[in-house]
Amino acid sequence: MYKAIITVKLRPSILDPEGKAIEHALQSLEYTQLSGVRVGKEIELTVDAPSREEAEAAVDTACSKLLANPVMEDYTFALEEL
Image (cartoon, rainbow, N blue to C red; front, side, top):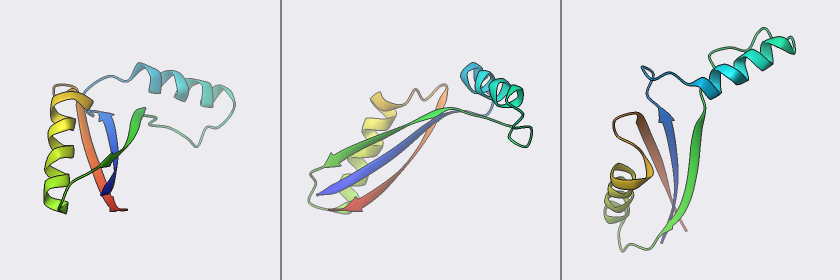
């Protein structure tokens, strides 16, 4: 059994209005040294698979078909054996 931690982020070429709003708020609070804010999401799930390779394949398929929009988002994931 494995735990997958998946990170999904907008591609660099896609505008991130939520990130821009956060960056503007940080600047108005005088955190002028902070910039380039991009917002993403983290998903944790348990994978019941007999091998690491099968767990990776299952997570990769889930990401590409459901958890991330392949047109607008990139994803990465890490597996941890439980």
